[in-house]
Length: 66
Image (cartoon, rainbow, N blue to C red; front, side):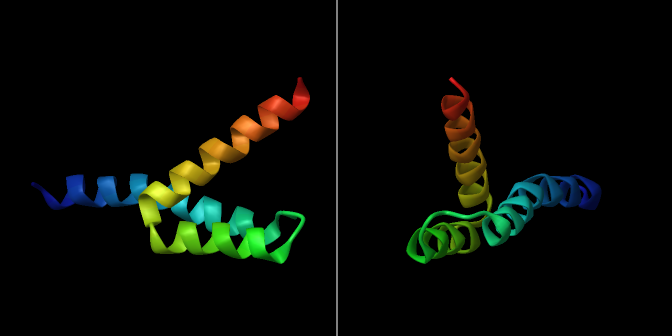
């Protein structure tokens, strides 16, 4: 694999993780325990944790509109 391809894959996986870390830091979860659990999940399971967090957040956001 070429270096450019690996770099692209890294950034594609890094962006949701970084976005989730920032979002967890600023969002109100109702309790510090929930915030800490999401933060740990996103940080310690980097690509999957970030993607799962974003999917769960946006599904909850869509359901609250209905």
